[in-house]
Length: 499
Image 1: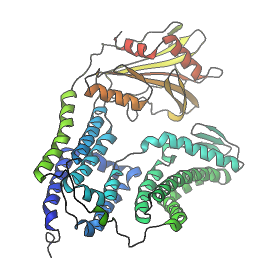
Image 2 (image 1 turned 180 degrees about the vertical axis):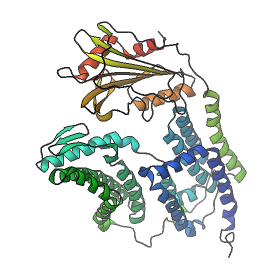
Image 3 (image 1 turned 120 degrees about the vertical axis):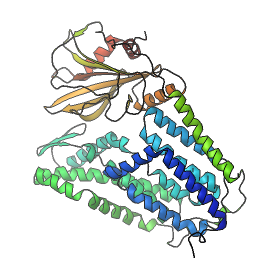
Image 4 (image 1 turned 135 degrees about the vertical axis):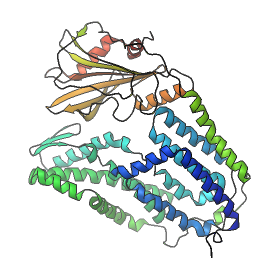
C-alpha cells in the first residue's frame, strides 16, 4: 500500500494545506526557528530539546490510528489564537525579547494545526501540541533565584554536618576553601530537563489530572533539592579529602549520571501511584463525537489565519522606525552636598549597555567621605541588539553577582563581588515613556507599549553604586546620594533634557 493510500481521503487536503502553512511560517520566521535550533545545539541547558523533536513525532504517530477516524474541519476561532500568537511575536520583536518571538512562532504553528484540522484534532493532539511549547528555550531567568536557593540548601546541610561555614549571597566560606554557587551550579539545566521529562512521564503514566500535577511538582522539587545535595557533597568532599578531588568528582558525576540517578528515584517513588494502563488509548475517541460549529472552507481558513498573523506584523513595521531626540551629551550634575571625585575605586567597575547612543559615568564624594559611582545611559530607540534590558546589560564581566539586596529608594539592588575581595552594591532604575521602574519586566512592557502605541521611544537607565569600606557601608552611600539627588524620574529626565 502506498503512503498516500494510507492517508484517508478526508485527511489528504487538510494535511497538505497544513504542511504548506507550516512551511510558510518557518520560512517567514526563519530567524527565530534558526535561533531556537542553535540554542538547542549550543546550550547544554537545552540539548534535551533535540530529543524532544522526534518524541513529538512519535506522540503524533501513536495517535494516528485513532486520529484518522476523525474528519478534519477548518475552525474559525483558531484565528484568534493565531492573532494572539502574532501579537506575542510582535511584542518580542519590539522589546528585543527572543523568548517572546520564539514562543510566538511555536504558538502560530500550534494555531495552524487547530485552525486547519479543527478542534477535534486539536483535542486529540492536545499533549503533543502542549509538549511543543517546551521546545521554547525558557527558564534561564531563574538562575539568580536558583543560585540563592541552592546556596541556602547547601549552607543548611553544611550546618547539619557540623562544618563551620559563612555565607554571603552565593559565596560560602569553610575551613577547606572559598566556594561560589555559580550559574553552572544553580541547577537550572537539571530543573529544565527534569520538567521536560516529567511532563512526558506524567502523560504516559497517569490519567488523573491532579496526579499529573502532583508528579510534576514532586519532580521539580526533587531536582532542586538534589542539586543542593550535590553542591553540599562537593563542599563536604573538599573538607574531608581535597578540593581538587572534589572538583574532579563533581565534574565526572554531575550530568547524565546524576540526572539518571535522580530520575530513578523520582520514578521509583511515583511508580505505585501510576493509574494509566499500558494499553490505554492516547485519547478517548468517543468523547470527540458530535458536530463542529464555526467551520470554514480550506481557502477561507488559510486566508483568515494568514490575515490574523499579517496584521500585527504590518503594524510593527509601521511603528518600528521611530526614534527620539537625544542631546549631544547627557546632563549629570553633582547634587547638593556632593562633589566630583577623581580617586580611583578599589576595583574598576564599568557597566556595559550595548547599543546605547549616550552614556556618562561620574564619581562623587560628600563631606562625610561617602563615595558613589553614577552611570546614566540613554537609547534613542530600542531594537534587536540595543535593548535597555537584556542579557549582560548593566553588568561588568569582571564582577560576579552575589545576591539580591533590599531596594533603595525604589531601585533594584544587586550585591556584587570582585576578587580582592571587594564588595559593591548597585541600585538601578529604568525610565521609559513617563514610567520609572526598577523592574526589568515592567521596563520591557513600557518599551513595547511606547513603540506600538506611539509613545516616547527613548529609554534611560540610571545606576548608583558604591563599594563597601570598613565602617562605610555601600548602602548608606547610595541612599545618601539618592536622597540628595531628588526624585529619580526628574534626574533621568534632566539627563536627556526633557526638563
